[in-house]
Length: 168
Image (tube, rainbow, N blue to C red; front, side, top):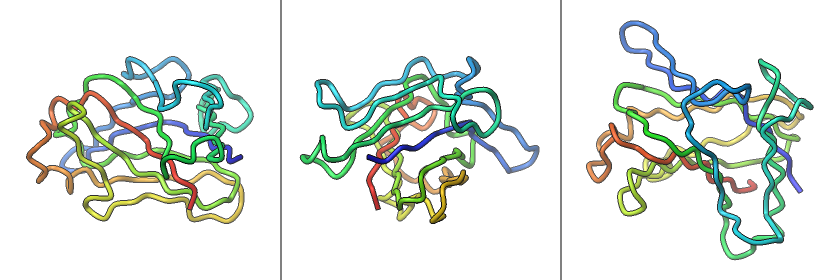
């Protein structure tokens, strides 16, 4: 089983004046309307703990994800999603901190206006992964400006930001 912690999901705009908007800091601040995942029945490939205090980056809490791929052999990925209404057109980067146990971990991001209107980071060769071989925090960044050429998604009306996790 792999355990990861996610903390401080941010959008950053670095063109002109610096502007950031917090998606969720897991301390009760943010614009995410709800979190959900791919598991519908036991045995779950992951469990989510939104009030973990074991490893925090800043603030009092982090999202702990216990991830057991042995419970989901039908797909290389499992996912958890931040539901809401996001205008990504005004931001250049999605930045998030991940603490894991030192195991290789690939995380691709899927942006959905609807299930039929989606874009995944690996379609542009963007595939964030943890690099450290020690248990520690890492800042993973997705260059959103490379997504805007995808015309099947209205980047001002994204409803889901899905974190698709795969052991490396």
